[in-house]
Length: 449
Ligand SMILES: Cc1ncc(COP(=O)(O)O)c(C=O)c1O
Image (cartoon, rainbow, N blue to C red; front, side, top):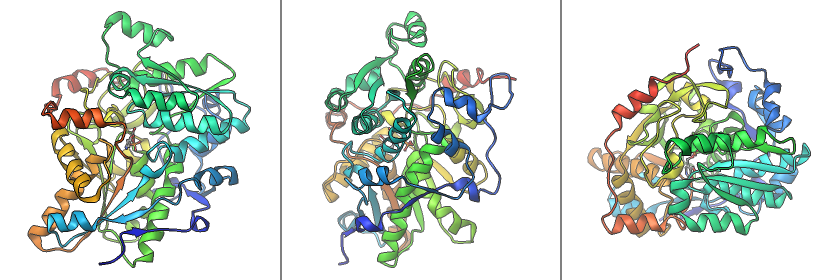
């Protein structure tokens, strides 16, 4: 049996992030103001560090990772690529299954790859405080960690339903010195407005973004950070795919198909973009984003200009969206409860370069438990979406006898998600119907200009 772990030395860690915009067949559409006029990049500097705005619109292919960021990455990177021999044996599949394990970061997911970079550039810009939103708590934990490392204060608006489901994520953020506020809250105009309409509003990523943006826009010493969706976030995550390529080269393998869970698209972009040039050159590789059936942004959404937040404070982005005021059901993969998707991922999906599929909540937990029982690691509920798709593909290979190479991102561990596992094991989780009417109603409110 070949090795389980395929490791890189610290010296083999990539020195640059890969900017997919340089190689996209069609350049991305501009961000727009509510009246439909293009937003000049400088306007984004009201809430983002200048270096991040530059990265947002850059078309340079390679962007150097600052030494200060690489030094912090080395606390856990390069992350392991693991051949899932035991899962393969359990499934009796001729397929080879590999997963890139991002749960080895201190926060337990891929999110610190961008959090560390964002905190660094804000520090350089003289910013003292950061605000952000968090769903599952993975991004909030990551920015709490990164803020601590660069001496920045952090305030996290945490989606209320996740705040209640995941109390230890909150403790984790507080351990790293961040302040955590359940959203919607009374701290902002956006939050107060929503609470006045419904005091029991469970919150959503879109709402938490509104609160964090509103606060950052109102203070000079404070900037906003986003854990997904934006071009610069996906850029930082490309370290995942670049490492994976090198690791597969070491064992002389190459994926036929890659699966990644998709919320806002950061681990999809991070893993898949470094493989896109091969696909453009004619390589037969499938790149598949996996989302929940209850929040089916790519598979059932519209490709349209929409706000990134619920209240309408962000620029308009051309993306797949379920409508900015769509309230996703309270599934346990909090990081996938987002109405929109990265503009880059959306465009590449629209152009047929990326694929997407949706899986239901119960199937994802069943897959996660199969994975935990065979490979040992208990995955984050978000990651279970990719595992579910990988297992389905491996079972198909068993039927057809194909020995495909399947790769997925295990974007995080589930150690702070055990209440969700408890609920699943006790039979208390359910599948949500595809929320057709709610999506239909929300799409009626797409901005018109
Ligand atoms: C472990 C994990 N995986 C995946 C996601 C989805 O985010 P993205 O689509 O940006 O990778 C999240 C978001 O919180 C997450 O915490």
